[in-house]
Length: 184
DNA sequence: GGTGGGATTAGCT
DNA sequence: GCTAATCCCACCA
Image (tube, rainbow, N blue to C red; front, side, top):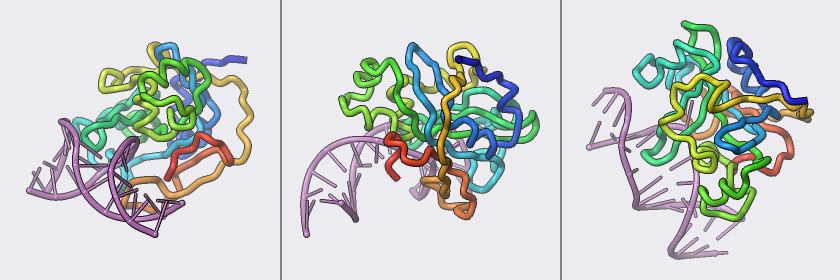
């Protein structure tokens, strides 16, 4: 079974979307990957949407859209916007498991180690060729989310990685025991 | 095994 | 000018 996840799926609680995206598949540019690690961002102090800016406004104005931003001057991070219009939210994709298109990913990443292809937010954007051009696209065309009925086992959670504020919020989610989780 | 610094730029103050 | 939702490599143990 291969069901396209509709954009309306993203129009709900961000933390819930972050958990339910685990196990789902991203299709982009001939590559197929399974989401195994996510983080939820709303209007909390650690989120770009804590303040509405040119960059973060997409988190206020859309759901089910691609939000890509440049981090540390050299890496991109992939997010999907959530919540209803007017309330900001997005889910950061922190790690995925490669399913197909592996050779292209290896080439773009410059490594042969499968476990080092997509095991981090910057890495997976590099592997999938995701950059600023993808920012602002609606899901369903160039990039699609698919549910193949994969059974996610135990979901683990922790504080979000790389932030200094709101560390008490356990809004990082990942599939227990999965070998492709990011090194933290 | 673990730690420290550098890359590189948009968006702040 | 400073810092960031990161990654990699050199170096030490």
